[in-house]
Image (tube, rainbow, N blue to C red; front, side):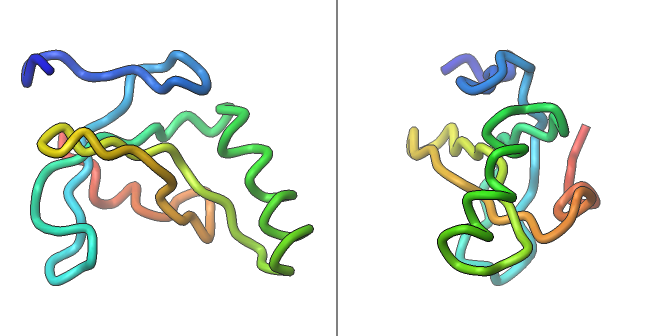
Length: 88
């Protein structure tokens, strides 16, 4: 992947934003990309999925690690969760 080009979310097509995991987190210390589009269907449907399956008021956002190619959910407990770690 071109490090100067941001990936797009496979669920909504919106450009993902660079996100730095918190220090000492299980996400590691490498920059990742996260879809912070609040209208993304993956994020929007996640609220109901988490409630129906786990009785938890939470959702998730699509996350991509450009160093490893790993992609998956980033838990989100509120609309603003993790937005303080966006690095523009």
